[in-house]
Length: 341
Image (cartoon, rainbow, N blue to C red):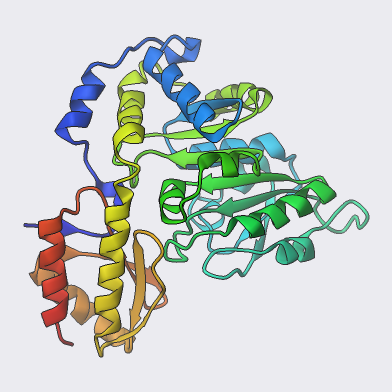
């Protein structure tokens, strides 16, 4: 039995999801003739109380199109230093949109309204780029699955309104935040100009994200998606997987969160663990007392057929997910309890 806890992106479609995919109503999505994709886009937009949505092959492309929508070359977008948009999208903001990232050192990937205001620059000083966009990430990947509190987002929204900036949410793991904080999607739909959500992480679909926003924004996004090579044909097979995931796999995220918290409790009891970031969702980030023990730790896990990931700086990551079943969890927790370094 091999147990992969490196990410929640490694999940495979269940037989039920595959069967649902086989029944997809397909057509040419470039001409908006794909029935299942149209259904998904309408369902996601309505879920968030927003006007329209557009299906994307990846969350990175959805984020990059959102940035292009809201900025002009030479502008500045404001984000947290460790955010996916800044660190893991291959310099996309510079390449696609010609913008710089004004990065903020946040609290586990989360920034505050005061920090946004401090980073903001406008046309009054021609030495600086003009800040036109703020991008938040919820939950935060490198922050260990931490969630934003709605009151802080409301304050950031207020700063954006006062300064004429747009607000985008990289909601790749927003489903986890909604479940963990008992929030409703419309809370976020009211606060953001655009939101990207991913179906291929905790929800278990094989491919796909969606960008949600106003009808005007999504109409422009269709052209930008095409410009970036994202126009697709019979996407309904993929959209059907996302529809199945929305209907069946959101509430079950509670199980992922519970297992992650149980691993957190266990690690906190081990003498060789120096720190475990408080767990809110399905990501456990921790470090050992000695960096030189990391290789030994990984080797011992490998002997048990358990895989986790390294984040740099001595930080390690465990991610629970749909394919991580209870029998696997019992095996992993027993292995960690017995493991000594």
